[in-house]
Image 1 (cartoon, one colour):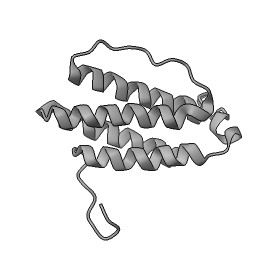
Image 2 (cartoon, helix red, strand yellow; image 1 turned 90 degrees about the vertical axis):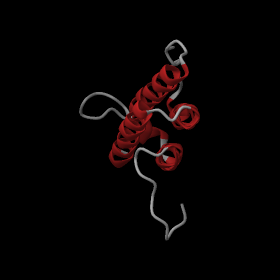
Image 3 (cartoon, helix red, strand yellow; image 1 turned 90 degrees about the horizontal axis):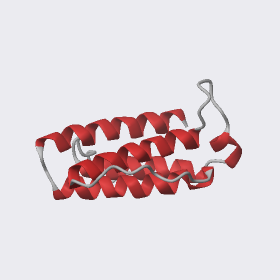
Image 4 (tube, helix red, strand yellow; image 1 turned 120 degrees about the vertical axis):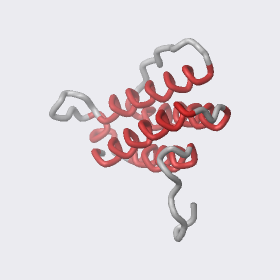
Length: 120
């Protein structure tokens, strides 16, 4: 997508790729204090990013027919990289298996990605 182009629909894996890049860039440039700080619900921004990464990993595994696995615990500064990797895995699975349920998965993850970025 160029600056004058129209963004792909939320059901398009290209849109997930765009939103993941924006969110992960924001996480990677955030101060460590802000990234680790507890919010009103007691969770940190890093924790929320890793939680979203787990969702991406679970959805990618489901589409590929692989068993679900728990992501390892990572240091807060790695949250953006973990999310980027898991989102890329999901994009690849969505592109490889264009099934009807994949559009719903993509739209859900895009919405969560945007929501996370707005709270950062």
